[in-house]
Length: 477
Image (tube, rainbow, N blue to C red; front, top):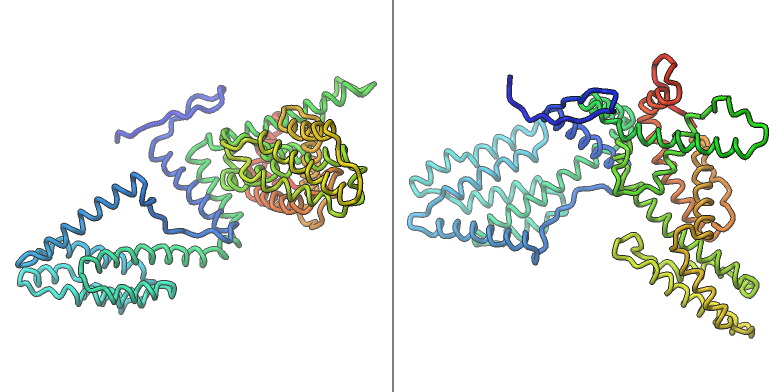
């Protein structure tokens, strides 16, 4: 028996530990990587590979620069020997040949044979033994071949290569341009793959995840816990409603809608602590969900600021057109980056309060009305500053209305294109809410299509443990 690294992954307490070999774990990781990449290519029209290098002043950048300089200086010293030493240069030509061949499409036999013939390293070594290597001729052939294979965006790079005389610098720049061409080729492949993935993504993701589940049986543990918490929240809500209702039959078993449980679980993702691991079935959309949550946090603050201002000085500004939008324009720049750990929200709210008081007073002065008293200004700024506090009543109210809007959105049939009515207090952020809502609903509906059968099995086990297991059916809105 082969010796292999084994990792113990614990299943729920009722099950014995499941031994997963390292190879099985890595296979599952590769499947997850493939699934995540395919999902990103299909749903993100802007997804592409970017050529990135270490910053010049970073430690890694400095090390890379020193090592590369040492390599090219050594190559130059070898080529300047009498007779020249070509072994390192030949290894570079071998690497260049493999890169050029990797750019070819199936059936490009003529150019493939030509590349292999011209960059035949065995032949080049024989020439080197007789000091008969035409190194500049080889470099020119490589450049001309690169010119035939590269994207139009690299034409200027090819021109610069042709204008370079120093052979060492030329080889160095050839590798730089080849690296760029690799990125171009990857993006070209992504561009051609995207329509196919978009047409087949549901089946592809479901099949890939099933493979992961077969290799790693614990791959739905977090998802199961997420759904279980949603069921417990729903039971708690029903219990609260029953206790407040006179004559309720407390002995009857509550009936819970699987769709409602699932939708409530999706709503929790908008308030998810992303220091915690997200359910496995939502990993591919984790970054998008986190971005939506961050945008909603900013919009909640803006809505709170506008509601507080309107409640305190609404009568004085009721005739000012688009005053709420003016308040929003004040708030947005000061809340930029509010989701960063270093952001001081309390300080930002103080700044917003000062600017809003100034804006209100300026508006009142322009219309010949008395400005806010010092007490009113302090009260307004104080209430705005207190938004950040836990259990702040205005913040809690706006949060509940945002949740209500999102819940109403999930309750709509997926084919219905209209938006639910925007709750009171959110009109100032209506346009942004509808955009975020549309993106959120798109993520949720697609996730249901892919993972609905898995959710159905989990829900059946948790809600109806006594029922016989059958074929999973995808929950519908």
